[in-house]
Amino acid sequence: MASASSDSLPAADSDRAAGGRPTGQYVVVARRYRPQRFEDLIGQEHIAQSLAGAINSDRVGHAYLFTGARGVGKTSAARIMAKALNCGRGPTTTPCGECDICQRVSTGDDVDVLEIDGASNRGIDEIRELRQNATVRPSRARYKIYIIDEVHMLTREAFNALLKTLEEPPAHVKFIFCTTEPEKIPVTILSRCQRFDFAGIRTEDIARRLSQIVTSEGVEAEPEAISLLARRAAGSMRDSQSLLEQLLSFGHDKISVADVHHLLGTADDRLVHAIVEQLAGHDAASAIASLDEAVAAGVDVGQLLGQLLGYLRDVLVVSTGCSERLFLYSSADQLDTIRGLAERLGTDNVTAMMQIVDTTLSRLRYSTHARTLAELALVRLARLEDLAELSQAIALLASGQTAAVTPAQGKKNALANPQAAVDGSPPRGTANSDTAPRRDNAGDKARDGAAERDSSGGSRDTMA
Image 1 (tube, helix red, strand yellow):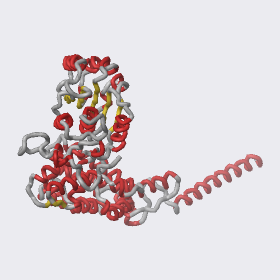
Image 2 (cartoon, rainbow, N blue to C red):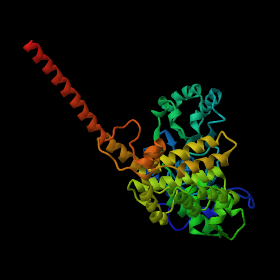
Image 3 (cartoon, rainbow, N blue to C red):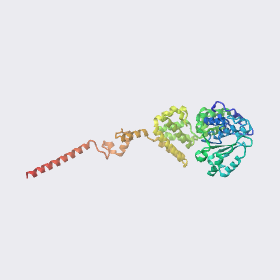
Image 4 (cartoon, rainbow, N blue to C red):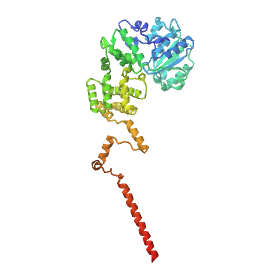
């Protein structure tokens, strides 16, 4: 099956600009560029192939469950499936998009394809009404299709009322359930559905799609700005398109990296790297100064700590031996820089740093002193000792060997026993290697003298 990552947008996109609504009414980017065919589903090629294969082989099930994070194409796939089954030229894997049924399904107001919000129609009364309507044949299409979004929001009683209809529905009824939390759905419902898990969309696929949309909108964009938007979306195509919508509303002819940072309230990647370099060099003062610079530029403290955590995550990935392909928050161009930090810090230190930042982010939710907590975290990170050397010292002590005394350890010993630092005497509580043998010799002499007195006393008694 063809991938949707081609260099041009689907031909139907231009026809969808009005979204089936009166000319002149603005439709947001996420709806104008919604996938309309199976091959348009970006990052879900395996699911598109399975659904198309079921249609071609006439093995379409009566109930499907689409699961996955937000913005990965669940509802879009459900609409495409509905169009494929009810298209005037179908059933077909390539719905025409021109007949009245296809256009109505695309806009979500077809009389035979009912989209239901599970959050607001979650009670048993709504499910009873659904069961009664399901027995009525479709008005003009082949199938009456129920698309229930966020189906996990239904009550237990509603699920129980749906069981019998879901197990043996009328021949003209199809169910498509969509959810972000499949673990909340009863197992009795899961066992009656064909389940498809939608994966998060790769960053490069999101960036490619955003580039296509920007070109179609007649706007230029810096490649790094598109990449930053794609990384920020964290696998959600809809989130990335919503962010792009805000940038397009600025009215600029070109989208820059600075525009993206201004929109998101985030710091420039160079500043984040500079802070990590300062922390690696135990320079708390410079790190706090960099934080002040970011805040003065309008960067949110929580966003900055989130960026710091993501950057350290990529450093951790490199420190364990992985390639830049697994980067989530950094670009591949930063590999050499991140590798240098990974070699300086080591896996143990990076892990400890991430835990400190994560703890601080959790505390920010319940505190009004965000900047103070952030500065406290930076100081703690800058004062973090080399955990690799510490673990080696512990291993040496456990094995009975004497580790070399570091300057820091020497300073601690001097503070514990100032007199020893002046005249070289041993610390209190320890034995001097030169005097200990003398004490042993003196004890031996005392024991020898006592033995001689005992022997001489015995001789005098015998002579007497």
